[in-house]
Image 1: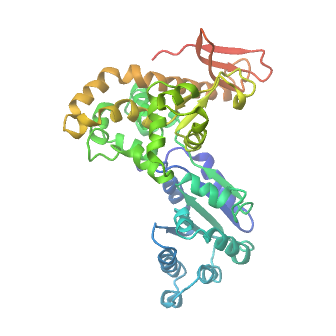
Image 2: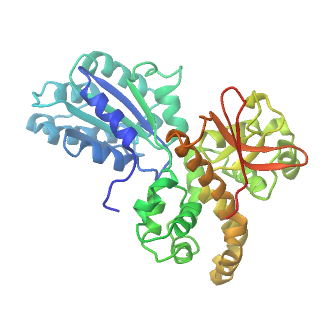
Image 3: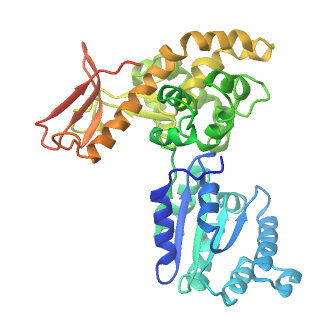
Length: 405
């Protein structure tokens, strides 16, 4: 996809930080494939920028690679030939170079350096305070391991806490932009694409090469060599250590267990032992805890239900995980038949509820309702369920709707 779509708010934030007088330190993070590097590349394409992609190698190897990038950036033969034992020398060489416009220093996958040396956030904090903070420079620390980026750069215990001038957590692209990704497809076809790709730019790119949703699934998911065949496993391996335990929790929810008690029962464990796993999966934007929209204190509500928020992971656990034996044995056609028969009923119809709620927020902003609602979601009790319910701040007006795909 050559066209850059969405991310207007994030681009505005980055540009505003760039234009501030003095230094700027931006923390940009989000799950893999969500478009962080593309966003940065678009932002720096007309700027004087040093872009460094950290690796999972040792801190020393990353320091050497960064030195080479910096030497190229400032065109310094002295820095190229130097044997550098600390990061300070490199940053000082950059900042001692005269620039005609503010330089931008990007360290992508920042968390890998902190992973190889837990003291690195402290090292960078000193560099920021002594070398960068009082200069005309913009620094972007970017990372895709959400938990590590938060602990290394944003948490109160982090040496970098309070140093950032802005932070951006990049999330999936909303459905309303899908017509731009798929200009030749109908709204219904776009909904089907969204139901599986879930707003993840890399997935959208892969699916845009296929004529329809089923061809895309066959090529990218049901093919053992396909890019997305084992994607949920890969995502979890990057973020958590007990992959099997987290898989079990997601699988239990995918099987229809939405209450804490039923999830615990399905896994044959105590409900209290699940808190850590559920919260981590919520923090990773994989799960969502949903309560009736009328609940005044959602965090303490006893009516909470857990559901898989990530569209692709929801699809994968519904159709791929239970049928891996067919795929592994070369019988993916059987799985495709199952998908063709029940994709709409078992998956797309539920995603469509989210699409409708997103559209209602848009209409809200456009003053299309006689009042502005502040909350929207589902409502249910022991006997009834309402697909869409929106309420205003005073609670005197309601919009209720039923969704049918």
